Length: 217
Picture 1 (cartoon, rainbow, N blue to C red):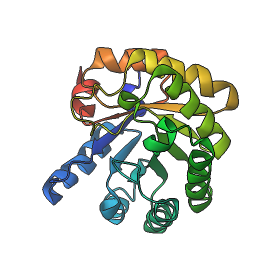
Picture 2: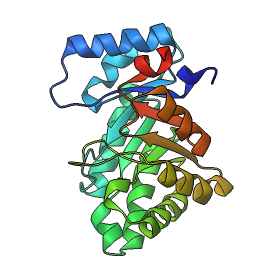
Picture 3: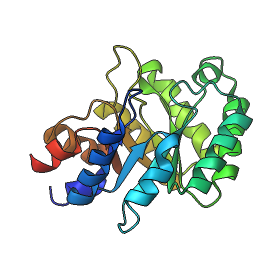
Picture 4: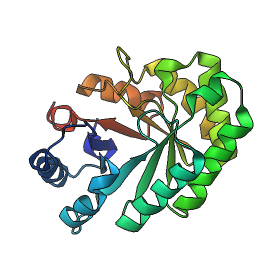
């Protein structure tokens, strides 16, 4: 597949990431012309400076990794990230509210962050490892109602979690595509073969820390 690099959001979200590792991430993103970088909110300004002469998207995460922050806190995080120069926002859904079928809460939670994002694309991380198939579909429907622009599979932080699965990406795509939303597959994508399968299943972008390996085959 040509231009595989243009699907990749080069990711570094680990708690103990060093400035040296972040610098390497930005350098690799520039070298391989990836779609974007995905980093924690504290480093958005750094990314903005390092990538100022590129078209690489600066993506950051909100309510990460648990999604259990109050809506107003998530919204504030998003507004700060926007002010710092983020291009796209990936928020974690409230999984408890999905499990409890508290659907209005989920919609309002997403809406609050979307308002803070303004024109910036909002991705909603479903954490598919923790959801049944029907819950994944329902979460997608709630993301549509909340005004999101993308649905995303995973944070990559679930203990013993698989991350993105082909069947989940396909289900998400089939649910949101008629409404104009896109799918980001993230978590466990470590080789070219898997990356291509995710794209074929409907993924518009790929969150991975293995971008260089995938691109170079």
